[in-house]
Length: 346
Ligand code: MRU
Image (cartoon, rainbow, N blue to C red; front, side, top):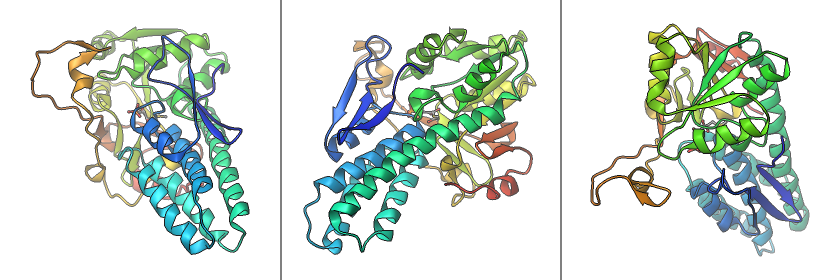
């Protein structure tokens, strides 16, 4: 891949600014945890695994900002840093998973001098980033086998390198199939209102030379009914114990259309996206974002001023619409409760 989504460099966090793609490829530097939290909230970085990496790096930056003489004082201030990070976005569970992992590592090293502890937390955040890249590659290896030779694959939102430490989940499966020499092409839903498909998926696939065609969201059914889509692959923000999956708003409609048209619908996600504490998808918190994302396109109004708006950022696809969940540990299908329980997050 010819871009870096996020990295730790010279004790700063560097992120490609996804709010400015595809027009400009700009990298922003963050030196304090509050600005990392703001970057997550403002979608400079987005996508469940990438948000998790950013949160871990934000916590590591926060640990460097803490002034303390004792672990107790350090730990109290660390709680505050983690709370700020946890309040950024509610749906992607990777954010909370990463924060918990950072807290656990701090606690396990409570006897170390505080300067050493800060270094340990920095190393852990970098490890989370490196692991995520490996998880994505493993998802790709497991998922590529499900993609038929010559297939047209529909995807929704951006579950690519931009949404992870690199390579992607849904796009990881597509990349791996492409790298294996399968002559596949991608149909990318534009993904209103934020246009992750048009702005990000189209951009990163074109950059990597993977054939991609952009369609607006309401065209998916048209192409499915005409037999032009072989399968759908999407990412996930949170998967409940029964396999119900929260992902970008519009994913549910794609899944229902796929079932109606007898097209396999796959979810690709690392085990860090599992939330086995939730019995089903109704318990997943759904973020509602600002109305301006719906009423405006690039600053231009596309609706009358003062119109009432709803803007849920995610929906939940019931497990019965999902043909299989592709994880780094293998492909789960059928009895999701048993299948998912057998997987352990790193
Ligand atoms: O609001 P976003 O852009 O953070 O939503 C992203 C998605 O819904 C992705 O499909 C999901 O996080 C999977 S990313 C590998």
